[in-house]
Each structure stands twice: as structure tokens, then as C-alpha cells.
Image 1 (tube, rainbow, N blue to C red):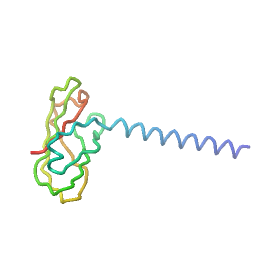
Image 2 (cartoon, rainbow, N blue to C red; image 1 turned 30 degrees about the horizontal axis):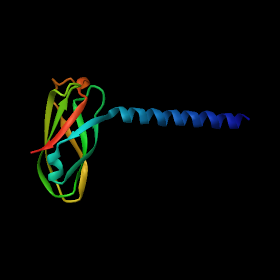
Image 3 (cartoon, rainbow, N blue to C red; image 1 turned 180 degrees about the vertical axis):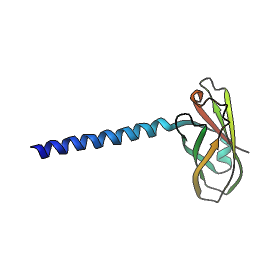
Image 4 (cartoon, helix red, strand yellow; image 1 turned 90 degrees about the vertical axis):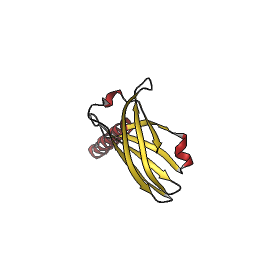
Length: 122
């Protein structure tokens, strides 16, 4: 009986830890708004994540169907859609490429106010 109880407790603890990790991971997800011009350049953004509490950085997963060389711009928007920060990343993708692109915002930006990141290309 004690062996069964130990298995049940360890299973519950493992489920709790897995659930806790999943919750933290989901909290780091951010809402993305993709500019229609991205698709014209063969780019798609699929996922955005903040770098954690107090961090001014965000990472966006970008998929390139076509080769791309240029600037990606992330604008931080508050709950009313007002821009409160902007970051630019110079990137080069080969056709059929994908990776996370990191955006570093100014220290003055209050990341707790950010509700959406609008991503576009220049």
C-alpha cells in the first residue's frame, strides 16, 4: 500500500510541476499583430514570447517561405493600442528558413503595460 501511495504522490507532484512549467510558459506568450506586408515578403510570425518579468526583450518566431534580408520592426502596444516602445532587428533569412528573432526594447519602456507586439518589415 505504501508503494502505491508513493506512486500516487510522486505522480501528482510530477503533474503539478509539469503544469506549473506549462503555466509559466503560457504566461510568457504575447499577443502578436502581423502586418499584412509580412506575407507579401514571404514571412509569417507564429509565436511571441516575453523574456520574463521585468525584461524589456521579446522573441518572435518567424517563418520565411522566401529569402528575406532587411529590418523587422516590433512595436509594443498598450491595452488601448497606443505604441509605447519600438525595437528593430536586422535579419537575413534563406528561403524555407525559420527561427526566433529577438527584439530589445529601451529600458524606459514599461513592459507590464504591453498587451500586443505589432510586427512589420522594412
